[in-house]
Length: 287
Image (cartoon, rainbow, N blue to C red; front, side, top):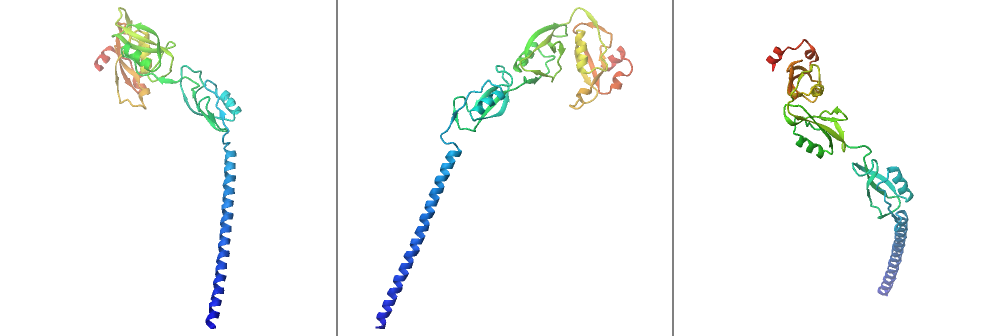
């Protein structure tokens, strides 16, 4: 009898445990189902929001803004819901200054509202290039160098010189252009070329206290050229513009043939350059 009662009680406990396990499983499954439904609803809401935010499937055709000025292009793109961003500038001979020469995306392509169209603009001013040292160079070589820089030769002027077909000077608007000066690309210059010594004599001008640029211009005005140049100290980037002539050969007032060279001695000491007078004997001893 006791064994029977024990077996019955164990059977009841087993059934209770199974019932508890089933109720727990149902609870877990119910929660998992609710979580899955919530996640699915959340993903669906996110997809709908993203489609609206990115305007999925809604695109506009990009208009052509090439050749337009910035403000004109900005207004046109704005009317289409697009933005304009300038990313670079360049220089073009064929486009008006300050206009757009290139755009990305290109005209006719499609993009979404609010996107940017990136443009490259032609510079609002002409590019300037530094003039290299062309003096004492053959005219053929100098003209080739100028062409490579985008500078044309407007006129060739021949003047007496010690050597033939050698460049004596570069001028623009009648003014001598020094080495390193920046010239607008596409502009033209006058090249002064030597044709050899002339038959007439001219007086050597006073050059003391003049910079090399000033001395060169003064000599050219007398149909003379700069010869050997010597410096009384080392030339650096800091003092190169401070040197002036303090001795010359031939000396001041000497009558020499047109096209002859005048040698120069340079110093940074202005007092030294202007102190005392030069004599032919003193200069001959120096040079």
